[in-house]
Image (cartoon, rainbow, N blue to C red; front, side, top):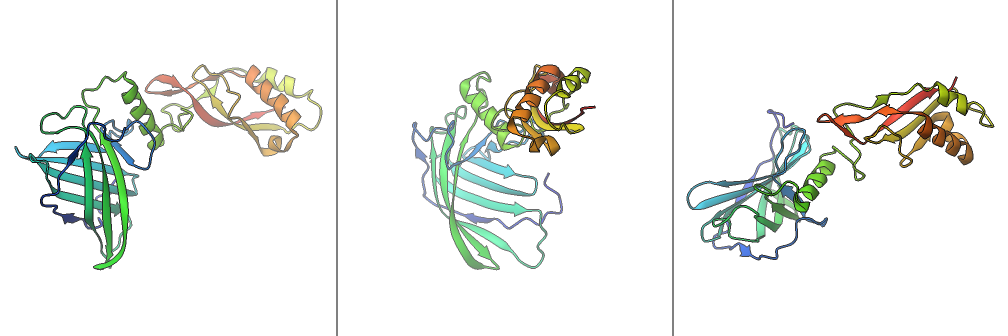
Length: 282
């Protein structure tokens, strides 16, 4: 979380005068992976963090905010536009929780290209857009570099939560926030899996395997929502990890066949998870 005593790196505003927002119904699709940073209002389920906020500041001004936070660093970007679709203010801010009392870093947005799929003063639901910012970095008032930031956003408020678009964004946000990995495996579920079966039969089956068998079986495995070990990804570690591949495969198949698990749970629902296991073989 953002700590209150954080020394925020200073924001520099840039007024764009008559710079206009471009309206393009075919603005870049949101539900693809590309070089544009994603922002939407499907929050992080762990802390309700929303990276997109749209607010009417007055009858004539609208503000679109994009935010990202890792807990230690973050980026805040906002656009203020009027009813004539003129960009009247843009803010860019990068912050960190590292305290820097002697130096000041500031940023100036030199140029902006903002494209929306519709006029937000007529309709907010379904609003999406993308932008390219040219940002100047200053350190103690000296220009150090100029770089480009690309972003895209979409509001899902009022959207069908069973729709393909909504489910895609929800899944991508879970990956982005470290809740699941690319294979849908929960990394830190509310309740971790635990062994349900007695592993006595497993050890009896392992002992006759030809060759040296260590006293403890260690592995990283994926437990599916049915409480079974999946074949992949599967990695034997410790002394078992140094055995020949044939022996490892035999142990792997026995472990899958002769163990049963209480699966992990997230929001009281069974989910797939990955855990390290250690089982005695004697």
